[in-house]
Every structure is written in C-alpha cells, then in structure tokens.
Image (cartoon, rainbow, N blue to C red):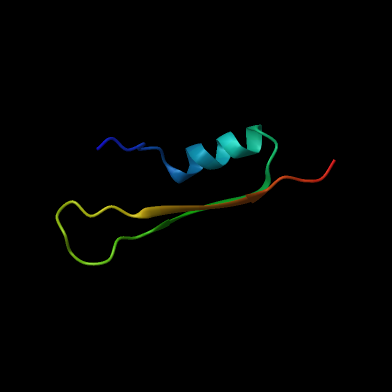
Length: 50
C-alpha cells in the first residue's frame, strides 16, 4: 500500500496557499510499540466566506 509521506507543515502550507485560514496540523502518535507503527495526521482549517 502506498501512502503520502508529507510533513504536517507541508500540508498546512498547501492549505494556506489554497485560501484556507486557521490551519492547524497535528500528528497523533500511534498507540502501542509496534515496529512499523505510524501516526495519524489531523488537519483542521476553514475557508473564509467571501
């Protein structure tokens, strides 16, 4: 399975360039102690009216 490996700041900058405001991107760490565990990227943003 392929996955996009972009940092939170890269995704946040892309959303800001696309006109979104209040952009926040946080990485939620994976639970457990697995060898190949990966976190989840939580992104929040809104598009201003107008």
